[in-house]
Length: 284
Ligand code: AMP
Image (tube, rainbow, N blue to C red):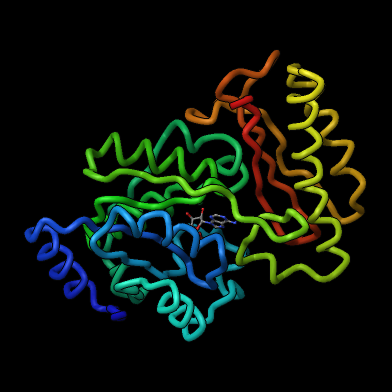
C-alpha cells in the first residue's frame, strides 16, 4: 500500500492508470475509519484493478461553529486499517493544497441538496460537491463507492456526476450498524453512555416504522411519522432536526401515501451531537 499526499503525483499516477486501461475504485472519506468505510472498499475491490481511499477532513463542508476542529483524526490507525483491507493507495492531500488561498471556484447542486440537511446546514453540500469534484479530477475513478447512511449525499453526488458528465459509476453500500442498531459514524465517539442509549432510539424508531409498513400495510406518511416521533421522544436528550418521508432519488418530501421510492430520513440532535439515519420503506 502506498500513501500519496502530493496532488500532482496523485493525478499523474491516476492518468497513467487510466491510459493503461485500469479500472480505479475510489472511496472518499474523512478518515477515523470504521467498518462502514471498510465495507465500501470491499464493494469496489472486485471490479477494480486498484482501490484508492482518500482521507481528508474537508473544511468547506463544515459551517462556522460545527465540529471541524474536534472531528476525530487518527491517520496512523486509518492507514493500518486500509492496509488490512488491501487498499492499494491512500490519498491524504493537505488542506492548503486542495484549497489554494486565491481559489474562487465552487460547485453547487441546486435541487436535491436544498431540503433536509441542506436546510439545516446551508453550505454543507456545496462543500461536499466541491471536494468530490476535485477528488474525482485527481483520482480519476471508474467507480466511486458511497454509503447509503448519507442518503442525501448519495443523491446529490449522483446528480452532480450526471450533470457534469463525470465518467464515473456510483456504487452504493448498505448502512453498516453497531450491534445495537446505531448506524456507524465517526461522530459516535462524541456520545457518552446516556447519550448513546438515546441514540439507539433512532434505529428502533426506523424499525418500528418499517414494521408498520411491512406487517400492517400502513402507508400514510403522517401516521408513520407520528409513530416515529413517539419512539424518538422517549429520549430525554433527543431533539429532532427533521423526520421526513422523501423520494429516494429526488429527496422531495412526500405527503399522503408512501410510494415505491419512499425513504424515511431522520436527523436528530442527541444533545450537541447531530446524527442522521434512514430506512428504505419500499417492500422489495
Ligand atoms: P465520511 O468519512 O463520514 O465522510 O464517510 C465516507 C463514506 O463512508 C461516505 O460515503 C459515507 O456515506 C460512508 N459511510 C459512513 N458511515 C457509514 C456506515 N455506517 N455504513 C456505510 N457507509 C458509511
